[in-house]
Image (tube, rainbow, N blue to C red; front, side, top):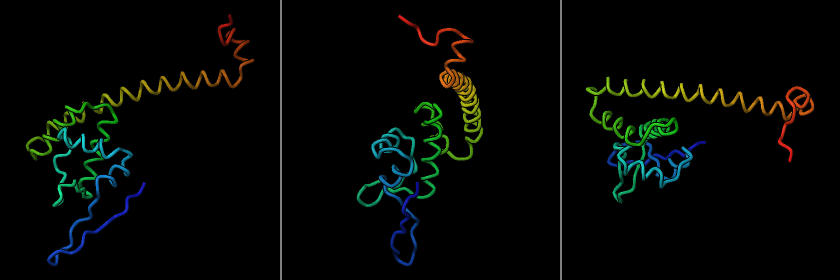
Amino acid sequence: MSVVLRVNSKSRGEIKKLTYSINEVASKFGLSAHTLRFYDKEGLMPFIGRDKSGNRVFTDTDLNWVAMVCCLKDTGMKIKDIKQYADWCAEGLQTIEERKTMLADHRQQVVKQMEALKKNLALIDSKIAVYENPEEAEKKYGLLEKQE
């Protein structure tokens, strides 16, 4: 999915960064604007700026941050832990080790999830194979479905 890029007009000889509205960002990430506002309210996006009207304004750097928040959320990290990660990022370089440890621990959990999903997928695939050749399955395993 692509986002229409917009360069803000020149102001006093300066070119401002590319910016995106909350709706553009929501569309890019398949989220609702409400979800992004919730994430911001929960402190998951402490770097997001605002325009003169108080509307959230996202830069390319902010899009990278939103992608990371979505990644962590989609892989099962709790909001409170994402908030901790965001807080550590805001603190700067002195929290590199904490962030590294948190992400390494989370990675291990994601690997476990992937292993469980692979096992479940194999079981689903085997059941599909049974249904693709029910006569053979009937001979090999007996009744496919419980009969009343």
